[in-house]
Length: 332
Image (tube, rainbow, N blue to C red):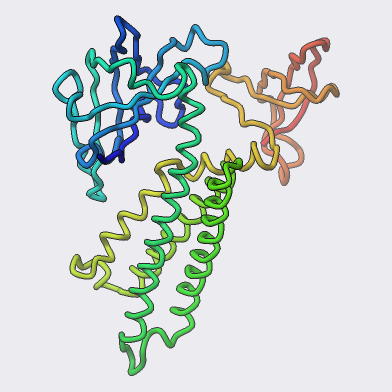
């Protein structure tokens, strides 16, 4: 039996998993599933899939991470009873799909763990997934290293191997160092996971380092193969396209930056400015309380200190517990 597929991502939510819309409503000893998933891999190569769906509407939970559950889905049976699978053609020839659920019935016993706790279970699996992806990227990186070092030793230009030039050697050596460093972080994440210890930070950093290292190794490999790097017979262009994927999936580089900044370094959580009216910015309260407040900013004139700032405006504080004040200040 093959279990290689996980149905989590949706078209309108992406990595904002708590906002998923796929629902599973309990009815007569079964769960009836409706919704849509996208970028779901290995469906054609799996017998079962782990599916994340909302069993309690978002509006009815106290925490947005609650009310989601995971189920074991028999894919072949599901395709006969309400699951539609549409493959997505893509640049890396990776087997991935869009899934549509229409009144798909799942037996109650296919619920994994406790109802409503699925997000917690999924997080543990996602950390393992990121570590596995790091291992894949590291393997890609070593593949690029093997190919490029062999090629630059053999390729003769101006009567000597191109690998004799430091301009060729240094980028290859730099890529190899990054791969080795990523590999160490990968093994650290594996060690913590096997010991059942928290390893979210290590999993994310391993994935970041490995994805970056494999991409830089791919760049070096393609560059020093010259025109032959674009020829299909060398396979470099194929692997180059494939390794680019991991800057985006299964978690993007920017989200890893945010995770490290907020959860490891303790920096303030970045604001969601889309919720603020036009002209409103977030500012730390200059009145002294240290809280975040909303301020209405109206540009008035050029700042005299042009080397440091660009505009001057009027800022009205709305700090809780403080009287509204108006002052001039500069901002970028």
